[in-house]
Image 1: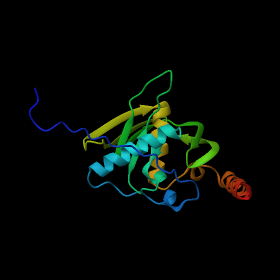
Image 2 (image 1 turned 45 degrees about the vertical axis):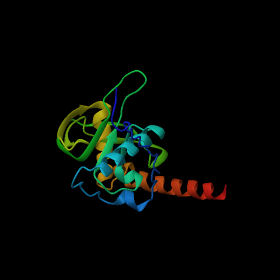
Image 3 (image 1 turned 180 degrees about the vertical axis):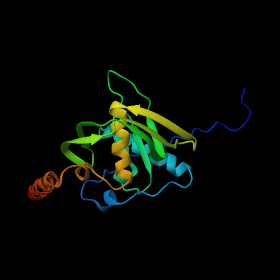
Length: 184
């Protein structure tokens, strides 16, 4: 028997945020560190996860949704394999090993992929959504995703990691695609 007020269940709806596309200025800025993990930061993380899954993508950085804060989310799970979802605040790479080249794409550069050289293995330190320090050792796709999303926190995009000739070719092709889209 329950004799108090009826229990209250609070349901918060997650939001799908707008993913900023190149050449949006927020993508070129260095993100600011998160000073304190608050409910507002946790809500942003939840919204980023929802946005990443809806896109669909395997990673998302706060600047990609217009928030210049050092926050990333990553989920490299597939239908075949499940991995823990990662939400990191103020991440930093503390060790790397090896070098590998592989194709990458980016939600902020739709329909564009290019080969990028990255460390084969990384050790990353950051804070989780509860404010606890975590250390992640990663290789393969997870190492690549961590480095890619952390680039966004430094104002870097895939096109900043390619040769100047490829970058100029990309920019011309991209501007032409934007012009054609505006005509439609």
